[in-house]
Amino acid sequence: MTSQSPRYVDAQTQFVSVSGTKFAYRSIGPQSDVPIVMFNHLAGTIDDWDPAVVDGLAAHHQVVTFDNRGIGGSGGVTPTTVASMADDGIAFMRALGIDNAYLLGFSLGGAVVQDIVFKEPELAQKLILAGIGPRAGIGIGRIPVQAYLNQLRSLLTFTDIRVFLFFTRTENGKRLARKFLSRLSQKKTGRVKKVSIKSFRAQLAAISEYASSPPPDLNRITMPTFVANGEHDIMVPSVNSAHLMLGIPNARLSLYKDAGHGGIFQYHEQFVGETLEFLSE
Image (cartoon, rainbow, N blue to C red; front, side, top):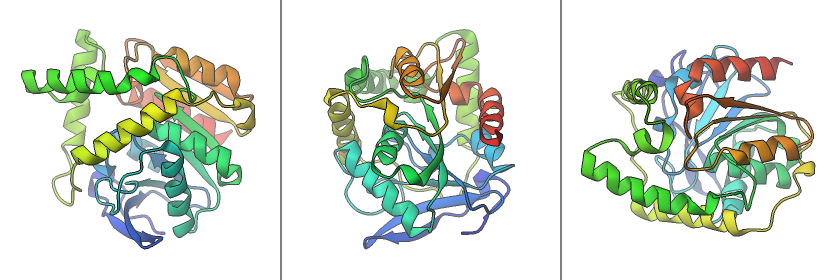
């Protein structure tokens, strides 16, 4: 793997074959034996990572983002379970020759990262879990309802759904949501396709299965873990972040004030700073 660009919006999409299926990915930052591999949210593609977060991390670490099976630029059919998504994530890293990494999972991606650790703990040196809780977490089963209700709200108001799902409705939240969407729009060429309705529904099915599964033994997550979220997360209630921090033996927690599900984007400078400090320890 090689670094493609000092800026995420300029990074070229690359492809690797995973069991005969083409997976799309991007890689920036100084080449490293221990890169940061990022796992994205519901309906999120490699175009939906905040460039401010990726660039901030890539100033010190190699950062790899990718589209899981059936998402964005990747081929295949989107799995309907988090466990299968974790299998794909493991196979993707193996295909790139990554056998040890810092795993960063946001929302659905955070669920996938937890399953990867339960399956192949040696792949993860440290974890960053944002906007997610454990299996059977409080209120996670309502994510499909929140998604559909706010999708309708988005259509009726001609507003990006992430404004409602990721950010608070305070003036500060609205202002920072506009800045976030502006950063996402900076990439003009080489964008991947948006998530299809079929793949979106498959991901919702995976979330529902995750929410209704037996609670995990978080003591099995032994590597250092940084948990982050906004204080007012309507997608994955913020109490779930506290449950992760209390259940994982070597975990710490940051909750961002006046922030929602996308708190790591709303307060990207603080999140990047805390993450870099955590990884350097």
